[in-house]
Image 1 (spheres, rainbow, N blue to C red):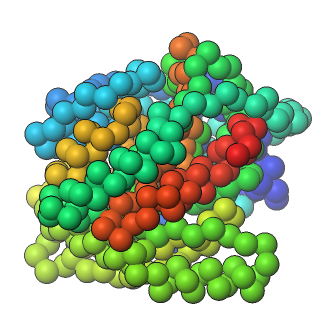
Image 2: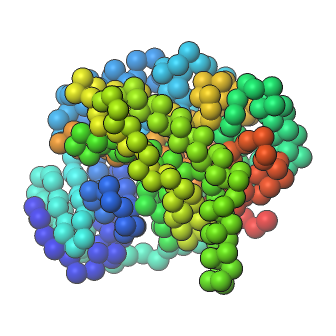
Amino acid sequence: MITEVTDVALFKQKALAWAAKFDTLCYLDSNSFNDPYGKFDTIIAIGAKAELTTNAGDAFAQLSGFKNANSGWITGFLGYDLKNEVENLQSNNTDHLDFPDLYFFAPEILISITGNTVEIIGEQASKILEAIERPELSKVEQQPAINLQPRFSRAEYVETVEKIQQHIIRGDIYVTNFCQEFYADNTEIEPLSIFRNLNQLSPTPFSTFFKWEGNYIMCASPERFLAKRGSKLISQPIKGTARRDADDVIDKTIIEELRNHPKELQENVMIVDLVRNDLTHSARPGTVKTEELYDIQSFKQVHQMVSTVVCELRDDVSAVEAVKNTFPMGSMTGAPKISAMQLMERYERSKRGVYSGAIGYFSPDDDFDFNVVIRTLLYNSAKKYLSFHVGSAITYHADPGQEYEECLLKAKAILEVLGVTR
């Protein structure tokens, strides 16, 4: 069923509120960002007629079989610790969320929104439309302040960064993404309200609300991991972050400083080289190219430096294999990739899980689109455990104190919706 709506923003809010009553939901919202590779403004996958839950081992092979058995839409997430399947690695840090490494489902209902056009795929589509448009929206409640705890004190973080820089001096790595967790035990939240507040405060092109078996992902990601459009693969790593300022003149000065900052340029180009190398495993020879380097994209909370790397997919590489060949994304690992992942397992204090992983979809035409899970809250309602990670790129020239402040800048919107003040 295809229909037109006059107030898209209101329809999206009502559709999400209706869909959130189901046990399984994946809501993907571009927030109307101008994206040359976006095919839809919003995708809402509701209810599971089939699902796959598994951990590292043969997860990608299982995903390939699941995709083949469900030829329509499937949506889901890939956890960072699938690295242990892609490479000879281990994850030994603590994990309090107990999310699987991979979860995908084939939806009973699929709603796509492009411009003012809404398509509903599922039984009794007209009744679904009536149900969505009927209710009045409830007011978004402000979350009572959460008692967040860090895994690192500021001093411990700085000391650890200095240790990591010794590895850079020795030549073990060139750049890495060092991540830290903030968490709250015995905490009850209203996930949908949290997400609605977060998406209003920090609208981004890869925002996600994901729900299954009492677990929740509330994501305000600005970053695309990997997309497939026909025979073309697109990766858009982000490296380089700067604050926004309410004063337009100052804000433009900040953009120019970011555009010319040696450390930010250095970390961006190193990750671009890594992504180029990752794409060669799936590409037709000679087709890997950097389509755009050092582009500055401005979001409500921060400015980001984004590069675009593309290639043509070889005929003998499947969609799932293309994802596996580039996973985990270079922007969240470092270079050399394996050494950086090994070191971060040693210096970080908690399992990343879905953070640093990817959420997205495979569509019936064999295309796909996955984000990078950053700026994201994770919640296990049964355990009442709330968690989010933030990370920063560590290079030889990185200032440990400034990197800590960058982590807090990236977490600014999350801290605000949780009622946490610095």
